[in-house]
Length: 142
Image 1 (tube, rainbow, N blue to C red):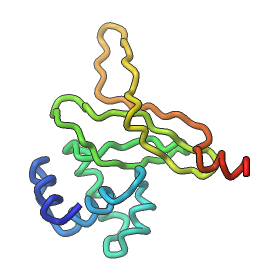
Image 2: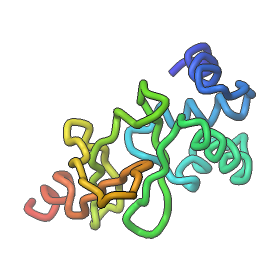
Image 3: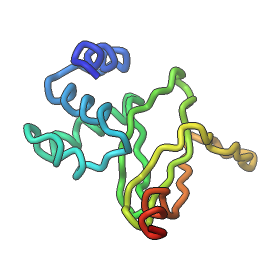
Image 4: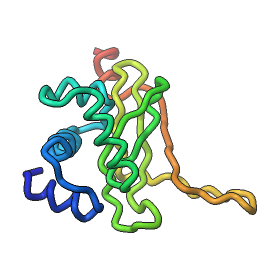
């Protein structure tokens, strides 16, 4: 994602496009999988952990990222591609590999509909499947 696209995306979400926020957004956009703060800290050498955390918190508050439980008690972040301000229309299942500890987005696998009891209002859903990814399965068989 280029800088102009980052600025436009930040502004569309009501976020002032500072240089730090653009760098964090680019790092998220260039990541193949959801990223933890530690992952981002390793890839962004110009911003400290607290600066990355502040950007991610702001992004989450403005519906620009999803915060996902990572299968080990931590959080990972991914860009939100929803086009609806009221409800996420890009929710999908995530897969956590218990061998290599990576998280994968299964974009073609939607989160199943859940009927909640009366009085409950769903704000968001995270659907995480744990197991062994194809790459780790192939290494074990080989």
